[in-house]
Structures are given as structure tokens and as C-alpha cells.
Image (tube, rainbow, N blue to C red):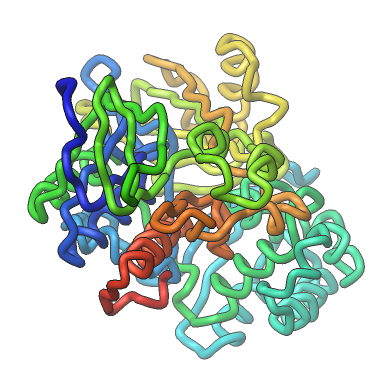
Length: 462
């Protein structure tokens, strides 16, 4: 960039994560000239890859479900759908190593019957709960199905208390509700808003038989969310500027907005601010929100990822999740990373990792290698070629009770200035789906402020 007079740009999007990319694509599709600013040297936000020796490593394991229609739109839009295929049917291997009688493998899976019968057979054969506990799950699921996630009263209640009131034992919470909830909400049931929990379970398990079918990228995340995304942006004329950090947003004389970035001033008719909530708070001009300090009350929750490269194959399935162990979810990332030869690369995704996020690597190694040997007999005696961790200390907003009242909508009080990010009022927890939906909402709000409309087949995602 060079110094000089403001350069005309109908729309400026600040932030190149999934929310910002989505907003930029939607605005460009509507015919606006768009400039996308990203402070990092890449796109993708917290969904990215990096090189470690000969391997390409994802910062964390990201999955999506069939019910994530907005994120599937994103994949289609950038040409990446084939790179992250869905399961034919939900099938989650659950290994319990905390049993006195020894490890036991169970599965959470569905059949092709209508809701709610699609899960009945799988639950009936789920060995990690007693017969009475399984019957109790059915009753709680029916009660959950009667809740309205948009009811503000639900946001003041914690999911753990609701489960206890509906007869769910600590074992049931561990072996089912938290098994799913911690991975999707990034919090345990007592620390989760009932509204967000109801959204997750109603949408994923009680809306459509295939809604909870799982998918994940079979290639490095950066290939989709940086490489393919940048190609899609280029194709519709979006001017993408990396290592470009916005420092101020001000009202321009005569209307519109001015964005200060790297010594230059960009003029815009509309601005989408698609950065984390604390950064957004620092950039918002006065009067844009009634109570801007509420953004600072939105907490964050960490995710720790443990990466282990073995000298041989120790896991024969694509992934599994564990009970009775600190290990949560384990994925085989061998092919996606580019690892060749007889070795295998496993990635452990540890959500809500408040107690572990700052532990030294050596301590995490002492904790997790023996656990992997306990879970995977083939790992006993296998050589560890590499062990490292990636830490996202502010991976998601904390879905705590009361967070709903803190999350702002896409439109602000300043005409033409809009907000995007998974932390905004999408009704979803902090997922890739929520981020893309926020980009839809922000683009729609920006177009409305300009007196324009742009219909889209996925308009409901906004």
C-alpha cells in the first residue's frame, strides 16, 4: 500500500477468517467492489495449516455435520466440497477404558428410519450406558425436542442443571451428552447455555435422520480455507490484501466510511468488521453499539491439540473418541499431512482444555503417550518420531449461560457498519457453521444499508 488520498471501494471487509471471506464473496456476488483486509499472511482465521518439516499440519482438527448447510455452501462456493466428504451415516466409535472389566468399544450410530427412530437402535445397543440410563436418554431427548433454542429464558439456564432435572446420571452426561457437547460447544454441560445446547442437539440429532453425519477435510485445512478461498475471491474481483491490519474506522465527510490501514486510508460505502470480539471492540467507532463493553464480557474457551507421529500404524480406523481417559477425540491425519512410509500421524483434539492449555510439552507428553498406549495396544512399543502441541487459547467464545444477551447482531447503530464472526448473534455456538452464517448476515445487513437486496438460494443461512 502507498500513502495518498482515500481510494474508492464500495465495501471493505476487515478480517479474512470464514466470516470475512463469506461476507466478501456475498458482497462481490451482489456486484459491489470489495476489498478484504487480513492482518495475517494467510486467510482462514483459526482454521489453518502450517509446515513442520516435511509435513503439513492443521492447527486443530475441525469437523462439520450434514446439518451445517451454510458451511457446505462455503465448501461448494470455493470448490472444496469433494475434499471434505460426509459419512454415509453417523458412526462414532467410542472406546471406554475406564471399566473394571477392561476396555470396551461401543458405537453411536444411526439408521435410515425417521426421527427419532433413526437413533433408537443405536442407543439400545450402546454398551456404555445401562438399560435404565438409555431409557432416560430417550425421555430427556423428547423433552429437549420441545424446547425453543430462541427462547431468551433458556440462555439463563445451564445445560448441566437441566440434564440433572431430567434424570440424567453423571455417567450418562459423560458417556453421551458431554461426549457430543464438549466437542461442539467447547464446554462441559454445567458451563453451557441451555439455549446453545438445545440448538446443537435439536439441530444435529432431532431435525433430520442424517443431520449429525460427520465430515472433515481429507487435505490440509489451508488448502481449502486459504488457497481455494483466495482463488474464489480473485474470481469475483475481490481485492485481497494480506499483512494489512486495520487500525481505525471513522465516518467520512459526506457519508460513508474511512478505514485506516498501514498508513493508507480506504474509503467505503459499507464496512464489515469480521474480527474477534475484543479486536472489534477496539475498532468500533463511538455510538456503533448501545453497550459496546458487553463485547468484553464474552468469555473465551481454549482448545488444545496434541500431535503424535509414530513409526508404525497404531490405529486402524479414521477416528474414535474415548471415555475413562483424558483423551477426547483422536483422528488419523497421516495422508492429509503428507506423511509417507510405514508411520502414522495422530491428532488429539482436546476441547474445553482450561486446565491443560498452558502445561509444558514435556508434561503433556508424559500424560498422553501412556494414555494412547492404554487406548491403542498397537502403540505399546511403537517409536514416537515426533510429539508436539498446538494451542488455541481463545479458540471459541465461551458458551456460558447468559452469553446470548452479550452477542450483538450483524447491523450496528452506525449505518453501513456491520459485524461478523461466530461470536455474533447467529443462534449457533462457535463453529465453522456459525462463522459462515455470520458472514451471510453481515453481507445482508450491509446490502440493506445500501438499499440493495440480493437473493440467494441459502438466504435462510442469514
